[in-house]
Image (cartoon, rainbow, N blue to C red):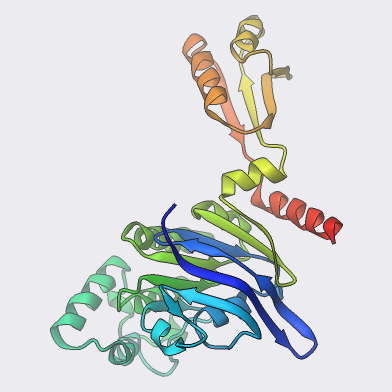
Length: 308
């Protein structure tokens, strides 16, 4: 595992008698996509605001890219990009004017600004939007523009707080392609979302509830731990079912269409058995259903509630 670029220890934030974040300890590996998931009001946005130095924690420690955020909040802001649910572009200014404004904050100008923004404008398909104000742009284009501006200074770490809220399915998929490209280029992505299926784009998933960490693992591990596993359906003629069942090692159960495997992880032995089955019976049709992350989250919440 890569060295952590974010580390928190017993991070806590109270507003009067209300505890928004409760002794949260997490580590985020450099170069990874880290999903920070929870229901509305669970403490996600408050945590991000502490991580980027906008609000001071009540207790605990935060280190981001080697910087003690509590002692040196300004230092960390120079190393990060941030995009919230409400895109951080100023209304009343065109996209091009927003670019010039943020470039000034990042210390970009002249040929370097022209080169960087020119590349982003082409990659994010924003040429026709440059003369438009953000409030006049469709939601998907506005989100792409916000992401482009937030990475213009090439941050090592990008915080995205509900970045796909209010965006259609096609625009969400395109947005995630862009996020994955940033991670492949070496950036670390810390993202919150209420679309739980988006967790599958991420290397690691952290669930919080009432400000407390309740699960932290890769998506596949969470599925194995908190669900019944995958379900594999194999449709094939009755005459082939006995031989096919033998190839699957006796774990298959009969169905109306053929055979099914359920209740376990889709690991190498299962995949190998399925490959042998298809090689021996080319007429077989295999479908694989994975547990929805929504179901995993419900199970995590239920177990966390029972443990309290």
